[in-house]
Length: 236
Image (cartoon, rainbow, N blue to C red; front, side, top):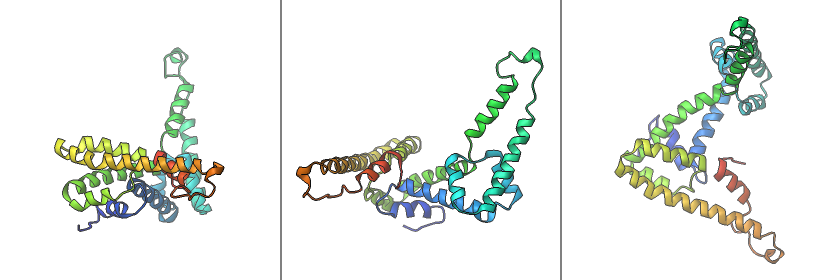
């Protein structure tokens, strides 16, 4: 299989052992986005116009702050805050005759604007945009490169959120024949992966029984982390 610029991130993730490959792709996008923003981007006023509009979610604010670039963080937060103040000041009380129409009150304007802010994050939106292309690339490789199927067979399974995304993408993207082939590979793989994780956490719990003090831990020492990764894609 020849690697191309648009397939490299997907193939690299499929070849990384021990993790849900979609988590690997997503986390790399996340890491690159934070590094870019806190590197060359934050001094660009045109770029900050975009971050001023969308803002950042709580999780990405924490990640930006963790980079320890105090000037960059201050500039991003300052101009975003000024943008919000300006927009809130533009929300004027309306004519009393319209105040009782749903959605026309000044309070309604404030709440709608602030509620919209809470739903947006510049980094999340950029990641999702690229991640969707990665999913399309995954199915392109699945249909065109036999090695992709073998790479998937060797995986330890997927986290449940990304397993659902794959199932949704397969239904939308693949023909009936392709979908049947995809399910015949991925569903048993996921079932086996989940059974393995369930067995590990079960044995982890049993090890707390004094009768199992001298029994080996097998693969269960990090069972809690494995279950967290399976359920939510959390890598601890």
